[in-house]
Length: 591
Image (cartoon, rainbow, N blue to C red; front, side, top):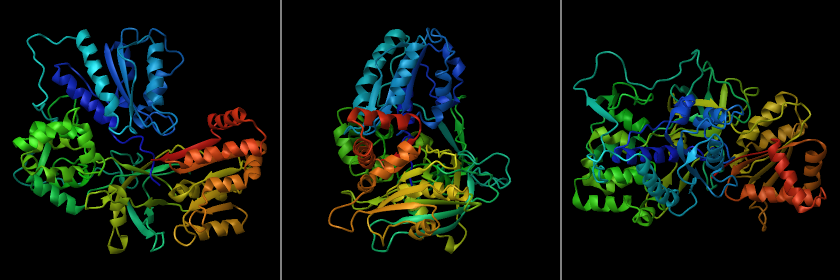
């Protein structure tokens, strides 16, 4: 099951845009991830712009959590930041209840600590037709007006105009021949290593099996994939997630090198231009062009506006440059949306549409132009207590059609589906981190789990773990379309039911004229749900697609609280809020 799109790189992209715009205005500027910044230095900073995303639950992103704990310490004086001017730019999704919660809360906290806000908080919204830029563009215009009035540049230094490229972050020093020592490869955590695997040192896990678990006539290809994690130092509990670093397909790598006129076997070393910039830890030194494009450059992603801005600067072809400038302008955003975002056109496809520009891209700019492939997070679908030294995931292979001829495919799910351990050894770079679901440790506490589709994955891990620990009060509401097509782990659930370790309530949406979903089954068993929650202190969990299901399930709970619990509407809402506040109602959803 994929994780929510809380950490998709939008904040990094916007931060880097701010850095570029500052350099164009001749302002000294550092762009840093919050957790790599020594937060005690904040008291000495005259001007800070915070760019922060909000996750589905209203939590700060991973690389902000240490900073978040520090900034909310109760012993910080209210004058701690009295010399600091600041602005907060939030990136969120208004389909979630805690829209831009992190940005709003940070803005308030910085004011409490004596900081002076240059502007009201910016609330970028993924749901807007033009994306976050609809709010970010006008906010940035106001920001630069305020900043330049505070810090005017020297009169003899003119602003660098938008059409002129800034220097690249790195230079690629090409090697004439292969070095005699050392071999190219990923930095990996080796079996028996002292430190657990991480993004900078993943574990290359052997894939044991890759099995389709939906019927042959089912519209979606869903895989149960198993890895061997023996000797990796990886341990996990129910609710944890595994991060997987995918690669581009060989066909796409070959096409990219052809369009840009690159030799895939060319070796190079990477050299940062600035002293405070370090080389990406995921890239070996020296590195081949094939390795860079296969494992690092996200050529299958939909390009952001910043891609078109830089591409326009680098273009030497008049007609192509004109079009690229239009796409990167504020006025051209609707046209860019129609060309790129709506049909989900990829970076590789855009470069094929602008062949003269693509062929003239200086290799030094590749890492400025194309973002790094980001790891994908999946709920772990197995327990170490049931499957020692194994890790399983349930993956829905993403494929859909837009107006473009070629179907759109999810990079990671399609790459995983293409791997066949039956044809020879397959190894996948992965590591584990804690998830957002935490299960009670008290033995008699009942657990109600609502997991339609691949949302059931973390609950299989939880049920396996709880049963192994003798916790049998497990209630699972599972939803799918057809009993014989996408009823994941049916035999396993039935065997647990026979052992009185599980109560299973399935909802098959397409097997009768009226569609039946998990929320309908919850209402049918409202008296049981109320009894478990109110009298027996049950915990309630929900995982799955964020579109409308979470709201439908919350609505079903509200009606249960009123009809079976006898609460009025305001009291039912307060009861639900209390469950959430005390962690007895937890959700993990994704868009």
